[in-house]
Image 1 (cartoon, rainbow, N blue to C red):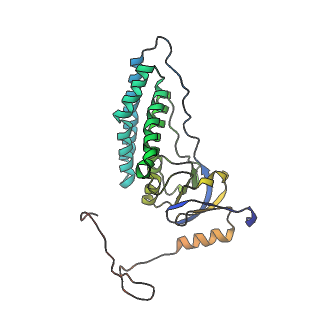
Image 2 (spheres, rainbow, N blue to C red; image 1 turned 90 degrees about the vertical axis):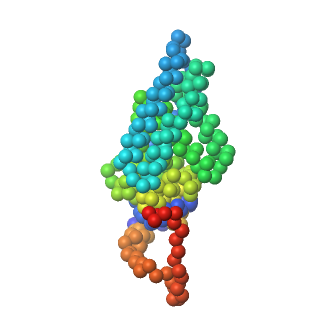
Image 3 (tube, rainbow, N blue to C red; image 1 turned 60 degrees about the vertical axis):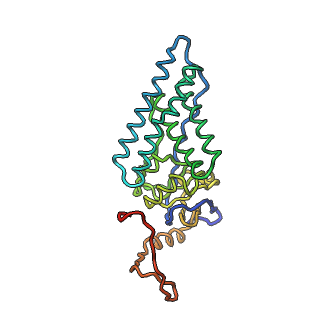
Length: 275
């Protein structure tokens, strides 16, 4: 049994309800920032710029292919990210930096994306959350230019609680709820794609947990996606109670009422019959 003195509580924003216990696996480190470098003397700047356009199309195709195997909001997010990968504003800015400043293509993509990311973060709110989406596309383009695969969700062969600084939309959209028991991120908010997709997949999630970096790899944690808490090193009894609560079957007959028996009408606002 775990010594309760070893426990500590990490708090964040609960964005997808559910209580689960599992071992922590961390996302691999993100894509490193390319060095500030220029093209070698005599290198063809037009050909270097054309590489950006080619990898943009390749990344778009990969995301579209992933979208074909996804459903619901996950598919929509992947399709939107695919369009962003081919965004001509980003591509044109990056290719312009190659031609005018002879920047290395990877560095040019990084700098072009930085401008968009800074603008979105300055706006804040929903648009501020989209800065992570641009960073995801940036990372995929940089990896493609370097000829290496983009980092993805680890698959250790057993169910995990996934801990990350943040998750890209494409990574979140392709999560398997049988493999990923819960998500904990240091960044993000309730309108981030991580939050939206976690809810649609039914995966408990806590975002904006700044102290999540203190949770060691492999630690047993108890995640409460409604309360926004992560209990590190829970006791056996605490885990058992959480498992028992998760197994409890709740039923609803469609009749709304308060605990003391007063009827409450249940109404819904929908835009079309399919909704």
